[in-house]
Length: 151
Image (tube, rainbow, N blue to C red; front, side, top):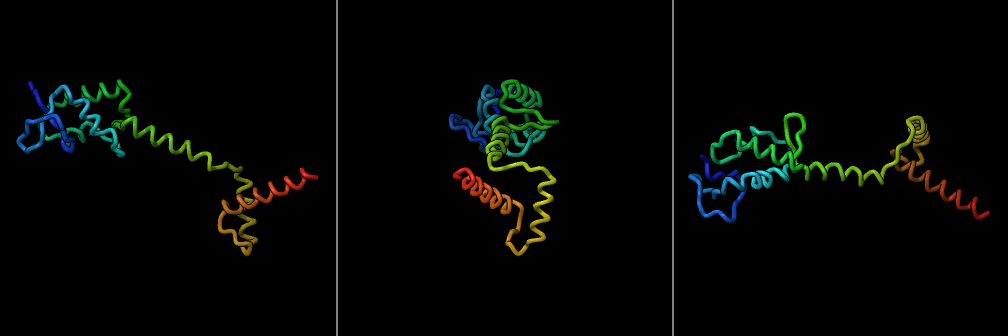
């Protein structure tokens, strides 16, 4: 039975033993935690083959399968097709777009088309894109409303 394992690019501070390649070895009981540390900040999806290739020692596939299964059950990693991604990275990817939604406004395509035509017809006004035009139009409309409400 395998008693010690080590994943490449993970430095074990507590281990005093070294592998044949000079890497510190960690106890088998810490494999799952070290595996999570290895993958939790990976931006790219990973699979079982990738993990096995990045291990300094030849390990049976079952060690990886068991650890992946446990991490998935705990919600630490999520399977997407035949690959995995850490929940930490997925949350970061989902939360950022939600925060950015406050900066965006959805307009009907017919209105966007009208604005594009107006910009092309009146290019001398200096509008290079729809965003600038919409921002100025809303500002002017707000000023107009404020004046109208003061009357």
